[in-house]
Length: 269
Image (cartoon, rainbow, N blue to C red; front, side, top):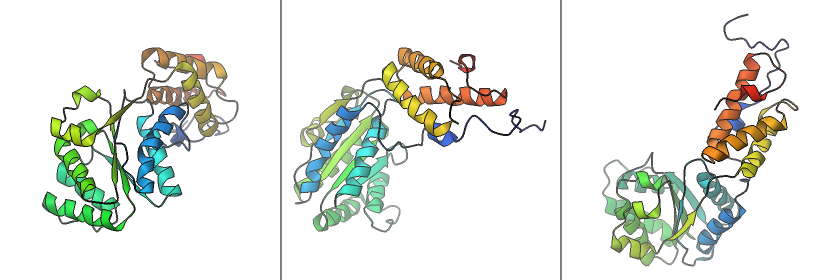
């Protein structure tokens, strides 16, 4: 057998598509997070009616659906309303100028020249707000933003000078108390919080069952395999990414062994 060939005799891999087990896959509707989704909707909905939105800090450990839920709400907002919803990852845009520049680009302005003063960037955003219905901005990985206080102050000042409003949803792995916004910014932000808790065993089972349907050939992943992975991960962390990664590794191991099904022994902790 060649080095990179599967041991499956008929070439039919157990895994049909690994895409559905990757961290970049965005499910059509998140599992087990109805309350959290509704809360995010409540926070940003006033933007669509030219009213003042609630600024919201979404927080909790990694891998428990924060980003998935925020992106789900923002996708629906773009599809179902005339308001704009912008998602920015602060790992990628972690300085004040880079974040404001990315916001402008997503609002439809040509990419500003590098080195543009912050005041000019804010003036362009203000110009956009004066002509459009409003915008909700998600700042994911908010704790990675270097100038959090200044950015929050910038965005809140825009609201004071515009009839159309800008709402902010911040997403962080850290507790609110560790974000260290200065009193002036905290006062202007008037931020509400939404805590995400780790997934339970049953919630992880529901997530894994859906991904099994999408990623594997029918009948190749028994219920006991899904239940074992969900139980292990729920006890340790409740991290959905860990559960999906274990399922992927188990599927690859079964494929490499030429098996027709994933078995308990394929699960690696």
